[in-house]
Image (cartoon, rainbow, N blue to C red; front, side):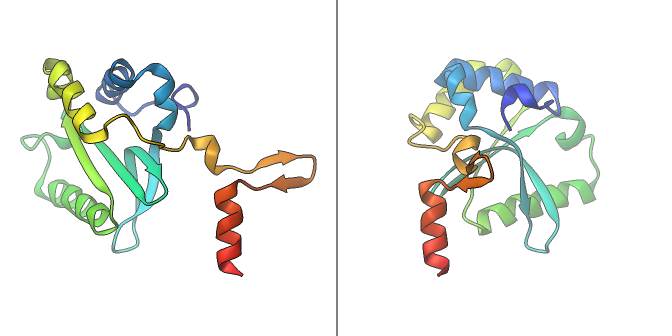
Length: 154
C-alpha cells in the first residue's frame, strides 16, 4: 500500500517515513511496502513495518517504538518473539535493518547516513503497483515478471 492509503502504526513509523523522504525524495516512498505480510519459520503470520523488494533483493525495515520494543517495558516473551521474527526473516534471505524511536528522533542525520549506506541509491526497487496486473475490462494483462513466472510454471 502507498503511504497515503494506510494509517501508520506509530509516531516512530511516521518519523521514519519523514526521514526516508528527506533522504531519497518523497517519490521514493512509493517503493516502501508498509506492513508487508510474511510467514515465520513456524507458519505464523507476521508483518514487516517497511519492506523494499526487487527480484531477489528483500529488505525489511523494522521501527522499534517505545511501547512495543523498549527492552525495559516489554516482557521476555515479547522480546523472544521479536528475535524469532528477525531470525525467520534472515533465514528467508531478508536483509533486516532496525532503528528505535529515540534514534529517529534524536539522531536524524545519523539515520539518514545509515539509510544511504545500507540502501544506496535504491537500485530498481519495485513499487507496489509494479506487482499488480493491469485490468482492462474482463481481461487481465500481466506484468513481464508475472509472464515469466507463468512460463516457469509451465
